[in-house]
Amino acid sequence: MPRCRLRTIAVAALAGALLAGCGTTGTPTVATPYSAKPRGSASNTPAPTATGRRTPTPSGIPTFAESVAVPCAGYPTGDQIVALLRRTPGMVPSGATATVQIGPLCAGVWQYAVVMIAGRDPLEVVTKGAPSALRLVTAGTDICTVEVRTEAPAGIRSTADC
Image (tube, rainbow, N blue to C red; front, side, top):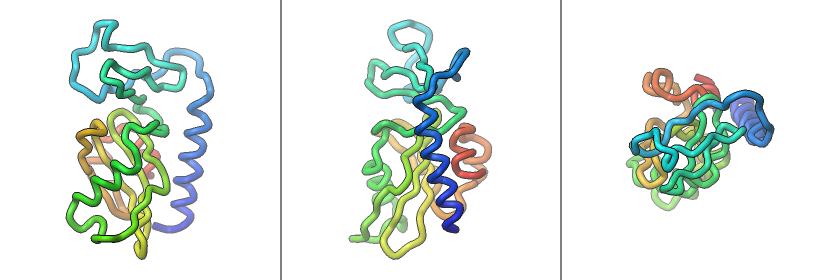
């Protein structure tokens, strides 16, 4: 991945993090929950906050707005993203050091991260699902697959330049 694209992603992530603290007027976007629990009762549908993030659900996992990717606040952690890559054949060589350089950033139930692996180009990673059941959607230097372009929330597509 060219350095200027990596810088653009880093700047976008920083701007998103800074803007996440700003208040908004009107009603924020309602986010998709991590679980398939029925929505509609006050006990499992917490009110959205001004940042587009909802308060934690009874399961303790927050949900995120789909329009912008924001820091995941540990849901999932960078270590969980790296662990998923290590379990996926061919992603991280045995014994190689892998660290999350950008993210994870969340929009809806999707996540975006940039992972540095010693001796390799940066690896862009898109995952989906709850932290305990992450699914790798795609990883590489060109992650704008059909699934990402057609199914990922706007915040993930924008962050990934798709």
